[in-house]
Image (cartoon, rainbow, N blue to C red; front, top):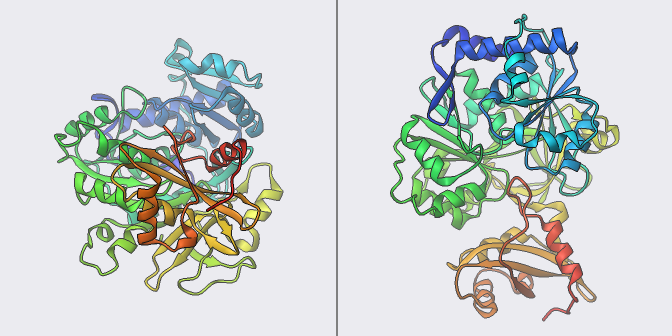
Length: 509
């Protein structure tokens, strides 16, 4: 089993179909894309002397060459190490050294930063003369691999420490691909995916199902997410899907060009990677229509734990419609999902515990970290660190990360429940809730607010009194211009807690 066979199949059956666009310009059809991947494979094997299992790193802004490099790596029997181009050079250095990558392809503007890492590897800027040479190597036949051979080292965001490299096998990624078709969306050769989110992570993982069905890949010329550019691409590329973090969806909805944008070519927005609050989702549905699918996954089970389908989003007459919108949907076909207590015993419907997952999409383990592997995969289940509960119909609602749970006066308080309430105020753009130490209650609730208009503590307190229990109400509201986020748009609650630690603490009301 080798994932590169997906490209070879597409080239054989749909060779003349468009494969890669740089904005509006066609770069490759599927036949030429497969030839490029085979030629690059020749360079890896014949010039670099790489052997099956060796690692090749990609530190690239979104780029049309991403696809040929990714499939060339697999074609050669190698392991891809995609790295977010927005990371700090120190983070580049750690991942390159930890993974043992022997070759690194890098965006030209990042070549100097990678050179300062002192990593012992060959570095090739994409777009330069050397890349033009190696991309025309002598093609080789695809190297056969076993299902459990590693294909992708997916490095976590590292918000709580050093990033860990989740070992994703050919079997893992094929299971994710097939689950896309059964649980997320259908794809035809006339469709495309717009890669507005990082191809090093979520959008890049969805390269696989789109190659499997010979759909086109559209890479924005800006190499980043720009709402106006996305709307321009949607106006010309048919059957368009895009993967978007909730922050991206929100920026699309709020863009001045959204009301007049041509959306007839927009097929699907798959959102995930963080909480999508109900009020934000309802605004997005009103703006773009029933074109949304939610997925919940982790790097350790890529894009594949649960899904909230297009049909679920459209079922507005269901008596628990809003509850379902606040959920992350039902388990993917290829996995089992349960909610368990600290002893890994399954909990009944309605009770909150840690979300555990097992199935063919779950990683092999963490690269060079047997202790973390044993802890995370104990008992044969992936321990996600997320807290959630199932309803009687199998819909999973996430409460929070276990580390973000607030315990005040012996009662569990889930920040997301409070954040959902605060976001009902029309002038609250963003809200994030954390706990801070309290001498009597253990912890008290603090809300950070990004406002777009006149909002007072009294207004927010009244809103909370109307919707949640008194003990859950924030004891302090801190108004800030922006919330700290990582490179994937996730709010850094660790940083918010640090902000609180640096302030003079005060007792709650």
